[in-house]
Image (cartoon, rainbow, N blue to C red; front, side, top):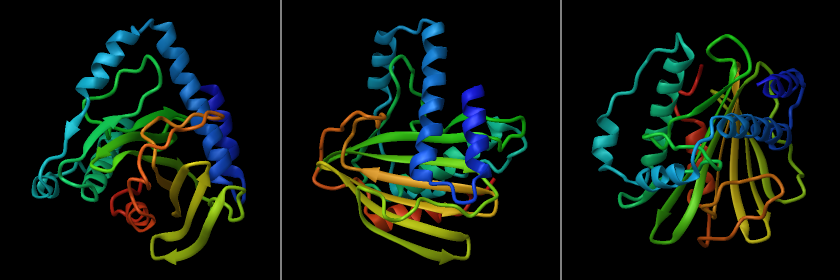
Length: 247
């Protein structure tokens, strides 16, 4: 937890935090912290694999999703997680084909939640919003498997992922009423990633989607499992601008 605190503190105090880099470092630290906790608890891998198999869900009809109310409370971290998870889940589901299957992406030994969109909140402070909120899901449809991720970091600055990254093939900035958007497409070998970050007055919200259903890990190549990312760049942009993601 202390590693997450220190990295997140550095992230939010930078003038122009490169979310594609320092955001990834914070996320990696959070995963290391959770992995150590899981190992200490001696969670059986077989149980995690079984739970992962049970976590595959078939999407409900779009009308059912649209009519499902989301919680409104944000006074505790648990309440904030429930609200944001509902908003994110509804937004992603609305962009997917009705027969798509969703599986939560997990680190080894981690049991996936019943709701594949339930956000992880790695603490970085005492206030409900002082945490790294993130999750990733595998989406499988007729074209193969890909992934969708979200990473939300509390931040009062206006920084976003810089353009001219080594693997970048497209990058642009776009002002919106909610804040400044950074839209980019990156290629690493056979893996194509559409990424959009929104810098709001109180947070930086980043969504991205790629064409592999394997969990992203630092320094590990991903297998191509579909021709293109699960979501288009415009769809990822739509996710970043989803109402209700504010703290």
